[in-house]
Amino acid sequence: MRALLAKAGEYGVHVHLCDLPRGTRGLYDHADRRIFLSLRLTQNEFRSTLAHEIGHAHYGHVGSTPTHERQARAYAAQLLIDPAEYARLEKISYDSHWLADEFSVTPEIISDYQQFHLTRVAGTTYARARMGVGQWAHRAAI
Image (cartoon, rainbow, N blue to C red):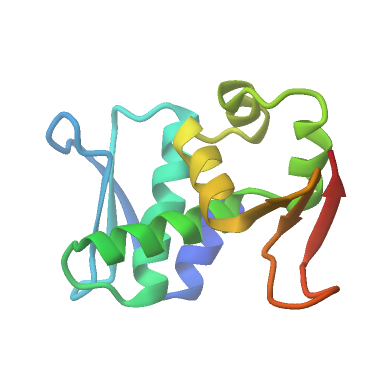
């Protein structure tokens, strides 16, 4: 948790807990450099939502668009999931809820990590793949 709060601090963003409307986990206010998080969040929701809102700060988003949300989701997944640990755990189980519990995140973060950061080709999973041989950050055979 401290690492996430420190990351917010790196961007000059203050984090506040408050009573947000039901269904709203968090908000980012770029003008005031503040993240607001709901008091109703579980620990996994808190970590996931904070990372998502830090993603908005990272990109300097003003307002919410589908592109902004996609960028913040990808940022949060990359921030919270260690590729080597993910590869180790995926050999045990593919279940997204189990993986989420192991990483102390929501299942949505696992789904986002799989969608935005993994490439699967012929029984091998590449994390943060690029074009060309050897151009990936992590590789694991499944």
